[in-house]
Image (tube, rainbow, N blue to C red):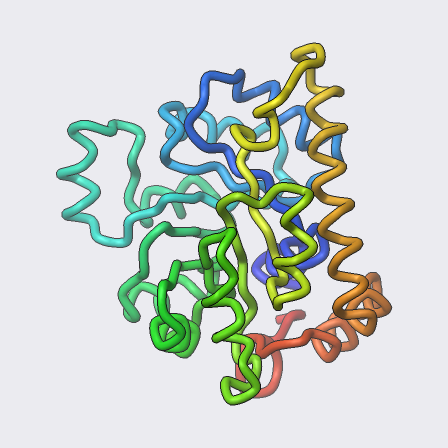
Length: 262
């Protein structure tokens, strides 16, 4: 089974992905909390000033953890110019050399960059229209990122006339109260930042307490997915092809494309 397929499946089965966005909390404590909560995948965004240091550290310390890098920019010239003010920024090549498993972006990606990286990394660009989502998925994106809590674009992408063409990954305002509605509308993956998760944090500042809060977000999302897609829930833990057959959307594995076991 390829690492790419393992990352893709981990995102689906974990359902809620913790996002490391800009805040003042201890990065290593938050990573420890993710591991304690049983996370298989995290998203470390380049908004965090220590990203260029922490991503290699996480790769060394937790080699089995799937690392998505968020807030990526897919134009090297833009990265070089922007790095003058945000020194933690790295190009896609530099990030790939760090051993990351996937890329997430606040922006759309050029089709040629999706085509270049999708065979080896999970690629999740953003879309603000259904046509933009369609074009990027057609270029090879694995998920399309949409912004919550508004669900208008989700419903357009899940319109029967669109044939449920792509899996949607939603961030923005994804609290435990809002997550079930997003999943019911058609979102298969949710991302939430620690800034939101710990907004009303009143307990001890330790990994165990943060892990309990994170575990609740994961449980709420997984419960909502089981309700919306019982066949997919029943396929969890089964062989790759049975699991792929249960997905409620298109995927890039099998047929004349990439085999999950290749």
